[in-house]
Amino acid sequence: MRLTPTAIVYGVVVFATIAWLLNRWMAGIPIQGDTIVFGLPGILWAVAAVMEVLSEEAQHPMILPVALFEIWLLSIGLIWELSLTGFGRYMPIRLPPDFFAYYAILIIGACVAYRSGVTSPSPKIKASTKLALGIPLALQAIQIFSLEIYHTFRGWSPSLRALAIAGILSAIAIWLIITAKPLLSKSKTSCQDESFQA
Image (cartoon, rainbow, N blue to C red; front, side, top):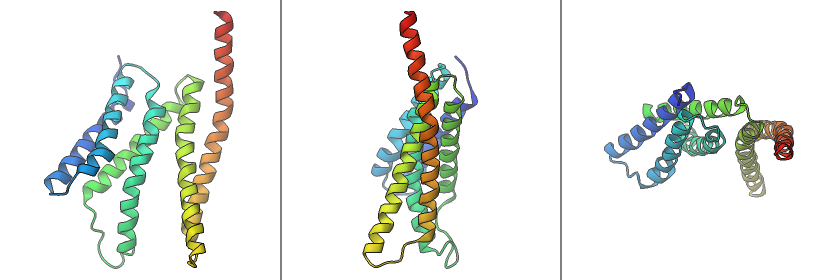
């Protein structure tokens, strides 16, 4: 057993999720949807923390898409709020401080999950971690491109900012998937060597 910084970060995300749900409940906000969207993934964060303490490697590819999904859902609310307030020009941003705190903690958790996964010794875990980040980013880029194409067909001018973000996400996703391929080949080769030795 080991108490690593990664396990501590995963544990902090668990406590932040509990605090997020409790704060919203105490503020009188219905949290049925939040319990499903953030509470159930919070269980996965807890499982990942326990697996890290028990020196298991498989939690990083498991938790990374969960982190990206939660960040994406919070980003929808953040972008909507920023668009309503003109990015703070027309009126103050009304989101509470705990929103930004939880958002930041999830980003830190995602970064730690990726870093821990790509520095672990197994090529299979490294490849899985890269794919666990690359595939959701590619899907997010496709979604943005699709929306902009839809807006163009409706007669609206496409957003250059959105297209730039989608392009950056696509580039990162392609790089992650390309760099994961040799690791997968290396993993298959090592598995075949082990089977021959057995």
